[in-house]
Length: 607
Image 1: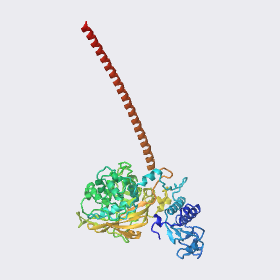
Image 2: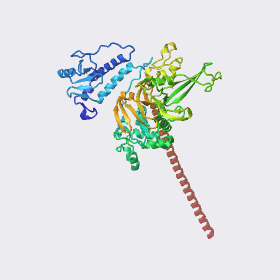
Image 3: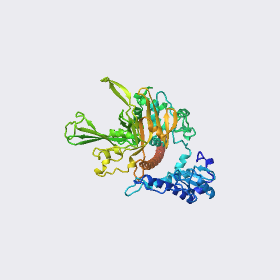
Image 4: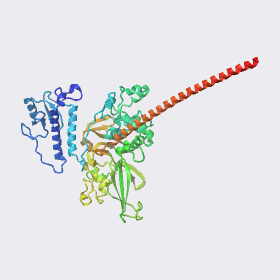
């Protein structure tokens, strides 16, 4: 089987450009992929599963679990029994397609064909079906159709001299002396799709940033790949170039482990509590790094911050305090970057993430000294407080409180640190709708963690929106092995559908099952579908257009100022010429007067 479809010698010579541009071939291929996609949607997304007639083999009449269809006729056959291969040879047909994966088989090459044009057709066909069966359907408008990016002439010219870098990171990080806490957090940052798109999109360039000890610059170095062939470096001093080349980053073709020494030194200077070679807490480093990156990011403000950190991790927690006497509810909303969950050790069968979230959003009693009602002004023993999530961030970060301090020998001043080894089960997909303020505040204090509220029929109908907008996918997990003062951090991370285990500089292929069985300390989930306004131009495009208009206006203003300066200079030169002429005329008149005086003096002397 061909290892790559991008190199010319690996391309199938029979799948020519004429065939790929043929409407008959394109329509047949797209119809097969669309048929399989619609079949999956009909069987999975509808409330009641329809009984669909299974496609059978044209030769042995066995139902096909993974059908292969001929691209020259309507035949469908088995792959394992080689019925499809026999059909292609007997009918002088060349190509068939795997309806499930979209891969094309060539009977002349007797091999699967990997072609970027076919991959694009496969993606487009599935997207068009998703747009028809999408749960985002609105009353008056459907989902906005996806448009592939086609580079303009200016973008093509800009890309000609650029070096391509890999878009996946499977590179270990060196342990620089009990720095496993740093390595696991950096690996989770690297595999965060929003941070990856931001830094690989050159939204922050460490060569242009003027901030000292900038954590965003260190993150950019971690993501970027340094290439000496780039024309940019021809204008960089050799000393700076050699210094920059020391930073071999994660997103590069180099597979040797990378030592994040500059990131570590920057952290030490910015956060003294993390300085030194003692063991540190990964969660503390995570929060510290987010705060440091927030202070150095573009768009960082104290009010409505739209920097990459808040755009990725920031959500909002709502706290509802209910007075038992008058029933008054006082609500406050506070920002959050992550959620810390209490563990229940000793529980039979272990704990679950859903159980932790359910306890996190359950009402808790407050003491009479802790709160006084703002309405009735009285303290009461019947005061409850309940937390809920008012705003869900694109990336959810959970920390399980495994480290705690407990008093010993009934002496409150004598406390011992210990680790909770409770087993925690967590899912690969998570629905956060039951824990949102929208559900909890309308459930009469009776929320549950199993999908939508069971008492939802008893409350007024609330438009929660598409439930898929509350679903998250797991993409990284941090584990802690050992005890509190003598432990080690490792992590799992996902790229696409592949899972990897990172143990400092050692990177091994893993599985989702192995990840879900690991003891989690932190879990990271990303939204399946990010929110956006349909049929509306994205804000960043509007900003780019506005900036382009402003830049053109600034150029015109500068041109007008230069023109005015030239006119002023021209007028000044003309005035100077006129002054010179006047001065010469005055000098000539003065000389004439002197001559006349000399003549008069000579006449008087003669007389």
